[in-house]
Picture 1 (tube, helix red, strand yellow):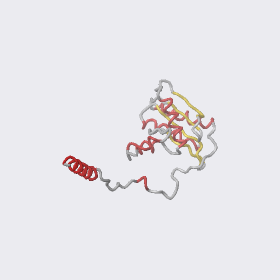
Picture 2 (cartoon, one colour):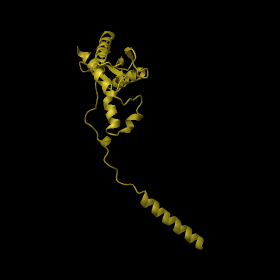
Picture 3 (cartoon, one colour):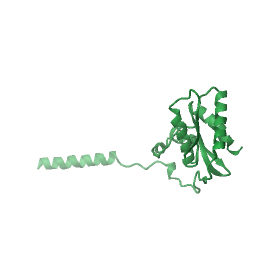
Picture 4 (spheres, one colour):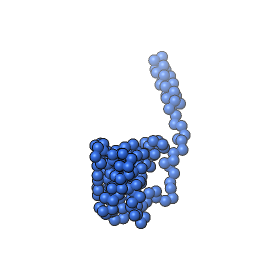
Length: 177
């Protein structure tokens, strides 16, 4: 009998301890619960940028990179992320070949600068972003918008993220010229 009472008391005590120790606290405010009125990054798709225009962008990036003595890999893709034009400058980091293409592809498919994904992870601590398919949270990928429509994206890699972004912006600025 003593054992039975002891066990019941022990179980009751443990149950009380567990329930009070692990009681759910009110969830903190989650900005992801906010529902925007408009769809963010809702840029309509347009016709893919031409090879001629893509090559002009790549050449503009190369000229800027050469002025600064930076060795870059530069990729331009269509709205689906398929490669249109690519150049690797002499001596550019080999690992950055795939990274430049990845940045361009992500900027096109997600219709936003890859810097926004970088900020989401590093500044806002929205680590769920890393679980999204094909994400790269590193600046240097910029969507190309012409006439209000997405016509492709450009991605640069080989330097620091800020170097990649700077030269990439030079190429992106060519879209409406």
